Amino acid sequence: MNILSKFKKYSVASLLGLSIVALSSSYASAASSYISPATGLITNQSFKVSVYVESTITEPQMSGAQIKLTYPEGVTALSVTDGEFDSYLEKNIDSTARTISINAVNSAGNGKNGKIKLASISFETTLTTGQLQLTIASDSTITGTGGEQLLTETVPGSYTLNISATTADTTAPTTDTTATTSTTTAVPVTGTNEIFFYLVLAIALISGGVLSYKKVAAR
Image (cartoon, one colour):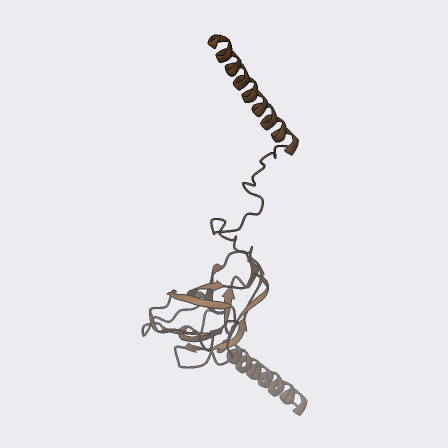
């Protein structure tokens, strides 16, 4: 066997070994965390999203996840509901920092792989239009059964808001400038004077008639 043949065999073996190492390294850290749905239209003040973790291959299995989410001003986190992990060490809502911290683990020997729901989160917003984004913090982690960090990708949730303004309470006291306006018809001044004149005249005639009758009767 000449030197060239030996070099070729050595090169092929080296490349094959490096490929296996590189492939193994990529497999050992192939996990992601994302918010579902990732996009959408929000038409109600109250809405809910889910957080998932996922390993893209059969191995490695996930033994735990510590995921931190951030949400914007005008949004309130109401509650965090358990997902598919065995136990939950933390489900904390920090309304001042507007962050949600979730720490969940699987029992020993019960690592999970594939698409796993970490939790569901209920929100409420006072915003009515514009864009709303929920993000997964960069210091979040997914832990493998060997203690290795698996998380390499995070996907935020981006939503468009179109919430109708709350209708005002129509039963509240208001000043109605058009309601129950009196429309009394004024009596003409000339009409009032004529009635009074005829009334006086009638009284005078009656009085005159009575006096005349008395004079006749006296004779």
